[in-house]
Image 1 (tube, rainbow, N blue to C red):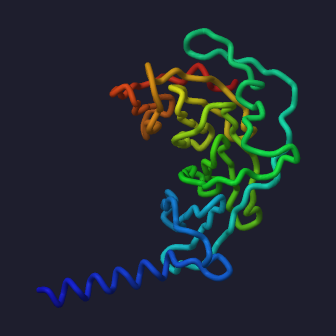
Image 2: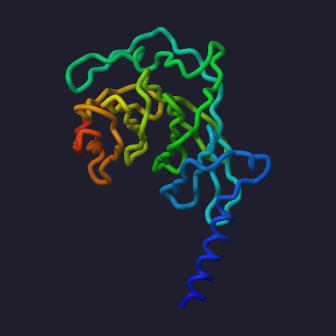
Length: 231
């Protein structure tokens, strides 16, 4: 009936406010860009501006407020990795200053618009401009522990492998960057699209070395990333 529908709608609204309403002094933040559940189902992560709020589910209480720490200028060392075309990609390319921070290394004034949880119930990644931040949201850490940098390529999507050991980041420039999660080292660069952005990346839940990409050129491609594993 109409009355039952109204009652359900009111219940949903109240439940939504209980979980997602931001407490003071965050009430001046303009909107929530993204929300995602952790694989364990115990947390909901929300991104607002460059801040990630991790809330307990279903209580909605705040578990962690995660902010990027100040960016350290990239080193001049070079670690070369080959992409699928045989071209050598250097960590200088992937970790170069992309212009989204000032000379002091301060945090860029941009919004976080995508979050991805790792299956280990400990790590999550958030995209903010040309940087992807890695956080440890466990009770004894609750802080940024690294960055996955894609140079001049602006990130569009991010995901973790099923074992939480690798992080794949799609970009607007046809490419997917694959990183080792433990040390944020660039493993390889995959040319996933003939033209335009990579819109979505996902690892197979049963074949940990298979990565799917959904691309602007109207293709979905499957990539074998076995060769990128560290020994």
